[in-house]
Length: 302
Image 1 (tube, rainbow, N blue to C red):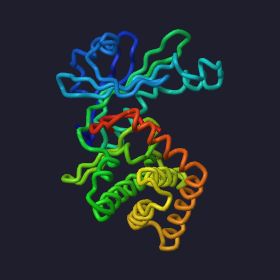
Image 2 (cartoon, rainbow, N blue to C red; image 1 turned 60 degrees about the vertical axis):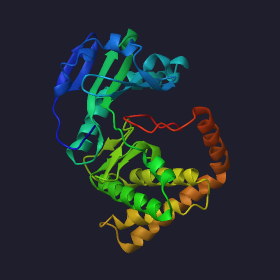
Image 3 (cartoon, rainbow, N blue to C red; image 1 turned 90 degrees about the vertical axis):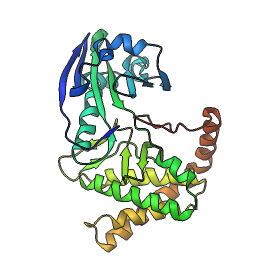
Image 4 (cartoon, one colour; image 1 turned 180 degrees about the horizontal axis):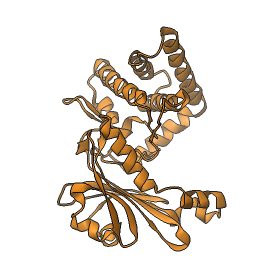
């Protein structure tokens, strides 16, 4: 379901697709002809967006989430933005990048959906399609756990648990690409936090400038305010206090300063956008129905 150990991968080359595949998945029949598999009707579409499709599929080795990033539908191409076109075309494969960063996370003991395949297929003029496949994680998201919590005490425990895991993640030189309550799954019995949606997660060779990691704190806390439906929510303060306590490299004054700074950032954004974003989320929730309770590598929805 998830991984926290060293993994080995083999080169993958099939019908124009080039990348890396997890060793024990090399012989999976579906991966022998990716184009046919990607077009097969036996799938559940999780997200259909202009530049990507996320689907859930069953295989002989278990359920997987498949993220197909389609360059031909990218707005940069439609609008003839040359720099964006060149950037997407010339940079290394995004699918392979996600596979490598999640493998690095697992090797350092951070839980995430097991990476199965990262690959790229170039089309006309070299413009690529990117693919990333990961195993399903059948656990509730942190957002769901917070909503279902029986009281403030249980919410505080969940936030303290999350803050400690995120602090350790940051101390290992990682910065998550989109750290939101819905982009993490919780295994309370085993004491594990699973980091999802790692498209833009980055592993630095050295401790990164803290403003990168501070962004994880700010986006997470602001979404706690949206989740609680109030600019006066106590949840961000609970989370930030626990995070600061989990940073032994910080002095007391540094802890106080960082907590105040992130809270101020969240307050400013709430005053400017809070009511509108809260209404938008509620509208989106009504349109989507119930929140999906099982997640593998689903994208953030806003």
